[in-house]
Image (tube, rainbow, N blue to C red; front, side):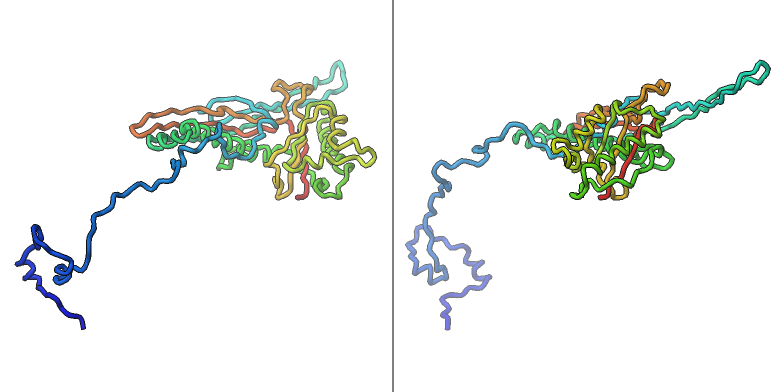
Length: 355
């Protein structure tokens, strides 16, 4: 059984007050008698935990030159169609005049009625859609990021430009769906011809050199027929395929191992260029698309430039304004897009490759 050495009530302790050991000779046994069974020593001086040559890791870090930015899908709509800058940011629509001649020559007679020719005018319109993208740079963020070598304003401005360009690419390919708006892209303009679905599977190992070549030649034959012979093998033309199909153009001729599909095309169509587009992957209900476009014609009597398809961009990038706030800087930018006009569908042929 534990022995009670001493006992005080709260009232008693209050009355006794604090114990004053100053000037008293008290040893450990005396303290134990009143319930203080512990010892205290002078505290040692605390030293920093050090190792030989220790230094913060930040001071031993060497940063490589430049900044690696995370990549986005390569945008090639400009390479395929180019850019036609027309209109203003605040316009509502872009219009294209189309004239269809009408007339039938008759046999001449001194007293016969004169057959009059005429034309049927029409206006093809595209609406304009506007996007915006801004950014804010705050004081603390900018200060901290700059210590790691980042220029926050530059990085965010680059991001804003990239965002607007991604939307321009999206509209260029697929248009913009909005009630009552006519904004179409390269993949869904209503004037485009139907897909030829009889093409071979170019990625199938059993597909031959002759089959792939015949598919491409067939696309040109379709254009040649629908253009009434205006399209020539020597015209500037663009073959746009889905990414991953360049290997198909490298298949060799079994009768001449030095000849590939691409080299044969270069001899048949000396001004044909080949462009790969990720947007053509699965573009036709899951099947991959291939387009052959004769870039322009100069022998149909038109005065518009003769392009088969144009991408209309009233404003590619315009800064709306900037504001210096107490805690940061705000900037906003915009663009204006009208999608594409397929002006001469008879210079375009489309194919669908089984995926």
